[in-house]
Image 1 (cartoon, rainbow, N blue to C red):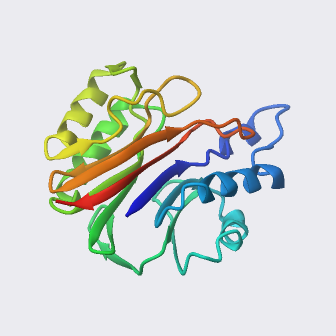
Image 2 (image 1 turned 90 degrees about the horizontal axis):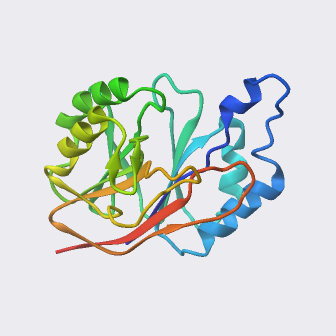
Length: 219
């Protein structure tokens, strides 16, 4: 099963800066995002930082996907969106949700961008809910990692907590955004196999993250 995680980074914060206009979701940009995704022929796509007003427009580009799920993460203005070729079963926990897709548990994350301390607190709260078998953790960690080096000790400790029972399939592949940070991750449980993990670079508008993907198989 091929999966994609992509923070389509519509720069929600930019529209609030003096003299700045919110350019990110001009029609050409969203068409380019959808075209990039379609090239990969994935069965599961997880998009982050999607403005609620744009969700139906994005979905209209993917008539081949029969299943969609919009996720509104607590304390965030934007939404996340799952698109899947398979039915999606939502399993709520106290701090988060699991989503069962084709026998694999997906655990979406989008950690706080501006504070390693807050990210550390989020990870500690989420740890009990992380999938222990046949599981995929994916999304934007916002961990400050530059070519394998952590700029924050808190981020390093948070990352090590996750990889104790999971594998970082993108660990050796370099930055996942334009500012040389490896923010976006796909972690899998050790009973799964990752093939053809990759980071797809682009030059689409104001979107600062790259698309990440892998093929996941059971052992």
